[in-house]
Length: 215
Image (cartoon, rainbow, N blue to C red; front, top):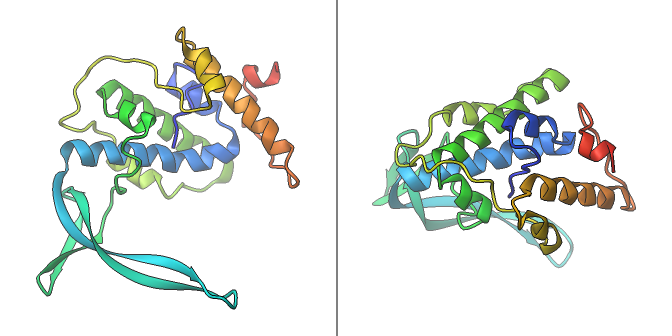
């Protein structure tokens, strides 16, 4: 969970996402926005859910077992429920579940409507780039379109750059407010690690950003 804030402009920041992140971060940004909406506008309640748990047997076979449990939930009008044997079950949702609610990036998103809007605009630009490159529509785009309006209970507290969710050596670059530089350096280090693996991962951009080309 992160916000790859390489540029103050959300559109330019999206354009500077590597293709692997272009796909992955559309989902993560939708999770951050969904969590903000649920925590701020949702009605807290208890619901029952079914989850699948992977179990590996001694023979090496992996099986899936269904587990039923009651969880804390933040209900939205688009959620679907069913009552069975006196229990209220969650049977469908259009907005993602809340997750990683105490992560610095998640806290930042729900501090101000301007933060929320920045992430939404970045995510939608990633969807546009994904479609232009593949000819397909990312499945998460439908969720993002439902998240276009900021939560009712999210105040406009102005804009502050996000915290750097990265190792301390990169956080130090943001001490004087250079968050963009911190994320650029962090991603360059990450891409270098990708390429040093036994099976290297490709570092591909639609347009190579200047901060990567100049390293």
